[in-house]
Image (tube, rainbow, N blue to C red; front, top):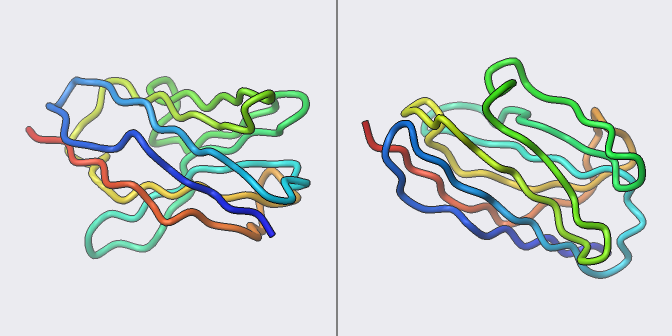
Length: 118
């Protein structure tokens, strides 16, 4: 079993930045970590993913060039640095863990709210 705990969400003005963290504990044998988001009234969508070992990354087109996913192996923590935020980035952001960089995803965190004010 893997436990994922997100943190770092909050309220930010358009154009600002936030960094989300996802701390993993338990049997962290999952090779890949991902970030997803769900905006109000929308379905959950993929944001970015990364491999624990080699740092391979995948990004959604909507966040390329603005968001950066990274991991700190020693701390079992994955980060999502979000820059140039806009109102369309407002969502609950979820961390996930799985065996493949594009899913499926076996474990999920509880989510952290990000609100961008325009």
